[in-house]
Image (cartoon, rainbow over all chains, first blue to last red; front, side, top):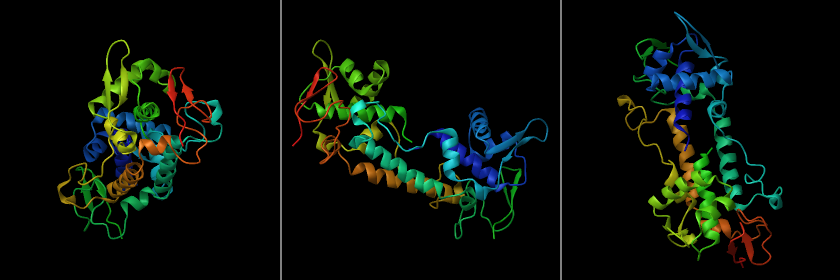
Length: 159
Length: 159
């Protein structure tokens, strides 16, 4: 349903949310998220342009979230790299439709409204810290103690 | 949310559903659906490959639905040009996740399940024949009598 770019953006943001106090190098992000480095670099540029992440170049550089994970909704991430909006006027510009969408675009608008509601209500914090969840996103290890993902990101266990 | 290709495929299928007994030329379809002809030609090839439409080349040629509009769901159309499936295993292939999706992919799977349910239950017939609807998809005219769209497709008024 969502594009590959959206999937990758959500993985990258989840990864950064798991390491809130670190600048994570792009190479490490690519390794942890299983995303081709060149593709990921473009996704990260889009996330930075949307001010969801900030970066620093050079040795010791990388990316971190621009604000706490409980202040970033999945909808913010999805919209930063793609389009998820209500349909308010006829996409074909048919004059006689006016404010009344046809049944096709009413159906598509209804789907968009449902998706917006589903993703606007979920923060990155909730995604990485779901009570009772066996697995964390991207973590190839059980979270019984400090978890190391990708060989370099250390993630504190959640309470 | 959905790709431009999906939007165009749904327009084309709605247009063909409005003209069930005609072979509609690609140029006419492009005009009625407001889709660039070259782009539409590729979309139509995908719809034909999925056996949702059949075509005939040459003078008097064009496309028609491969089966009645009440036997084609919007989900059929969406899947013919894109991807809308449940997520059953970890997309990253993380071994320890096993059958348990992480919270991120549970959320994405939940969204996919919701969309599948929304679009599997709606046929093209319902889209072009919604009781009480002021407008038909793509029709730049009120449906008080026989409607001509794009200058060549004549559509019978619905009951």
